[in-house]
Image 1 (cartoon, rainbow, N blue to C red):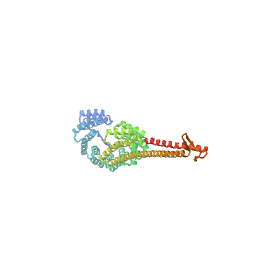
Image 2 (cartoon, rainbow, N blue to C red; image 1 turned 120 degrees about the vertical axis):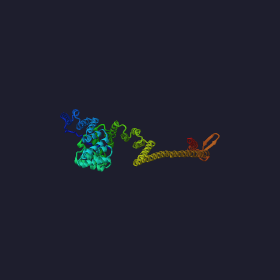
Image 3 (spheres, rainbow, N blue to C red; image 1 turned 90 degrees about the vertical axis):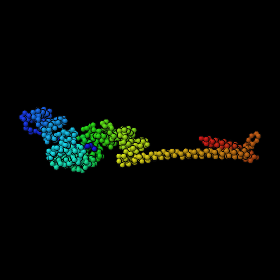
Image 4 (cartoon, one colour; image 1 turned 135 degrees about the vertical axis):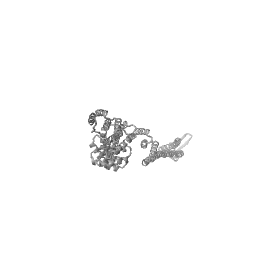
Length: 491
């Protein structure tokens, strides 16, 4: 969240009516007239001429104001001190000196001078208000509230005092009290921009986005070129899920201030949420062009690449972030996600573990638990993948065993059928030789029938030869089947 800036009222008091020698007074009056017309160089010349004739405290004080307005603060301080050397209780010199110290960041010296002005004039409202701001700048918020309330007691309608008390409450974390004071300021002046702006910041912080939208719209109504107001209005729209409206406001902020890296980054986030990843990448890169070492921008760019499944590019961006801050837990978490998506589980678990350890060390139990859940999930997924691979390997074994069984069965079948074929062939051959042929030294002759004295018949003649050769075919087939068994068994 952007730091809230209090309104500082630094009023320089100019001394007008002075009576002294006629010539000196003439130069003084000329200086005063030039001063009133903001012609500081002429005023300085005339004041110096007057002081050369008659050095008085009022001329030194006004000369100091001219130097202050020209930005020459050290010379202004010197002139105020000259006035105080003439009159140590010169109220206006003490007040203007306090403002000069404030301008130079010399807060302790400014506080001393504001206190002196209050001592000299307990009813000086601006001194109380500016003392409140000085305490605020030192982080002394309780003291700031006390002085601001003194100003309000003197003038209940002092807009700036109410606003600055609200700011001090905000810095103490007393948000509701801050809202009350800002609203009081706006009741006095409805167009007081700073209170509308700070209310918008608080409403965004409290996630009261409708109220934030109303506050920032009022700021823009008063000052349409307020880039921060457009930005925070876009932020409120973004949080309400009104992405198109958010994009429009972010773009308006960028037109006014094109070199603000936060504006560019948030426009990238809006594009990212809308699914316009390429456009988001463009904006993230612009933001990184302004602030290349911003861890959030690097992680956002990495996340955009991850969304496009460009895991290698995402890892490159995350590694840049880790090189800047090795103990950035969120980056380790994102690296774990990208490595996990690539299936590189050991490295993913390593980064998840680092994130878990860093979260624990900084007392972030919720995110530490999240990192631990990622580790458990990854271990579970890894175990499942390993189980699947093992199952695939085991699934191959039954096939191999089945193949062997089938092969063995086939081999057994080859052997059995071979033996059967041999036996049947031999039986057929013996039967054929005994009953169908005459076997003589001259050769084999078919019998006409199964009786030896029957006359020869052609049909029986051919049947005898068929049985004979069939027997041999069966015998040869038996040997072939047994050879097949030997061949496949060898394989």
